[in-house]
Amino acid sequence: MTAVVGTGPRYANWTLAALAIALAMAAFWPARSSLAQEISVQEGSTLSKQAIEDIVRDYILSNPEIVIEALQTYQAKRDAAELQAKVDAIATFREDLINDPASPFVGNPEGDVVMVEFFDYRCPYCRRVAGVLEQALEEDPGVKLIFKEFPILGEQSIQGARAALAAEKQGKYKAFHFALMEKPGDMSRAHIMATAEQAGLDTTRLAVDMESKDIDDALRRNYELAERLGINGTPALVVGETLVPGAFDKEALLRIIAEARAGAG
Picture 1 (cartoon, rainbow, N blue to C red):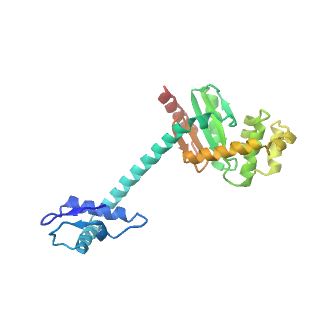
Picture 2 (spheres, one colour):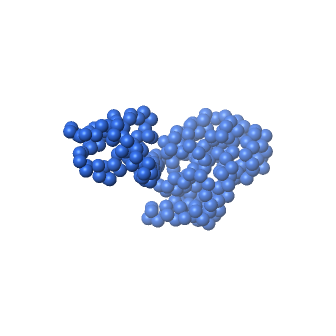
Picture 3 (cartoon, one colour):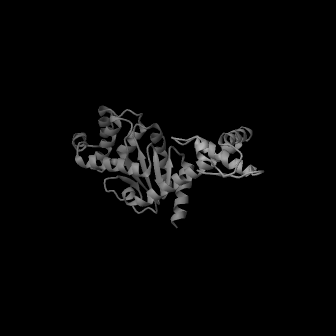
């Protein structure tokens, strides 16, 4: 960043403000150089570079709000860029989101609004929104919900995800999924098998299917897709072109669904 400084009454407020912003922003670069290295002085100026630094420093101390404004503008631009990147990623990887045959779904197969949830059975926020999602599906028959097992909280989380995908092979994913979500975050083998038995699963077959390679592949694809979408926590819900990170209540979810439906129309 190079600013040109003039002579005489040349140090107008806007020039000093520009230099102040330059200094404030330079403080956030990993390898910054001094302002003296950043500013070139026009030939014939009677001010030294040290004097210019002193002027800028005094201006910042007298007008600290300019630093806040500069940082707010920078953050707003960064947030907008990140949001646009996520929207672009959702569009780019739409097929992976909604058409992976290994991803179980509930709701209307031909729904006009498709939601995709990335979750972990040991995540307390995921358990909190499970009931919200179930209620939304009951109230809106035009929604399809696709599940992306995304176990990120340790080995027990992976074990729960593997069991759920194995339950899909017996056509009982929905019952097993919501049964697991109703319980605390214990995903021990004993707890999983007890829950599976209560959900009507053949636990002997479940234990065998849990070790299948296609489940390895499904989880790998989910991890890769989450990375491409910038998802690093749970729950994360994609509704249309909108990524909703974190927990939400039913009213917020129904509003997001309505917005997605209006946007698709």
